[in-house]
Length: 204
Ligand code: MLT
Image (cartoon, rainbow, N blue to C red):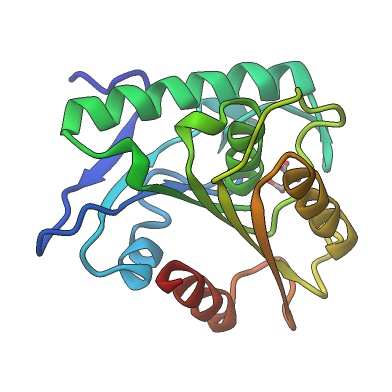
């Protein structure tokens, strides 16, 4: 099967929708994990959901890490470029509008989405980043004007301190992106308020 470089699921849009949600799972997830969240966020959007290619003791991820919260940044850059190439190939293959893509990433998936936006901003107009942190200590200088991001963090998250999510907001804003930050009364797992915040933000 032609998987365009990544094992993935693709569900076409319905009702004439042109929106594409690019779903990026967390560590240990797969290409099916976020489909129901994607559908809840937008009942009609096309859903494109790849599986991360890195295996950490059998758990799929989108890039290598040296320890929890300590990233192999060379791999982050390589994998973000590889994923941006997949997104471009997939939008062309499925006849989708690349200007209508919003990434929806959770945890490791949010971190690779943030890296994609920092490294290849033209490929990613918008991103919903659930439980995200700064993926690169020294991101390249890129113009992110016209890019939008929602960062939804958990105040009680033991893995990703809210200060780190807020630092990511600062990095994206400094490069010109329009960023909204929402802090939920939650831990690392998603809660209904995350989805409500994402729906509000998508409707803007
Ligand atoms: C990461 O490795 O991307 C973050 O620590 C989140 C995680 O996947 O646990």
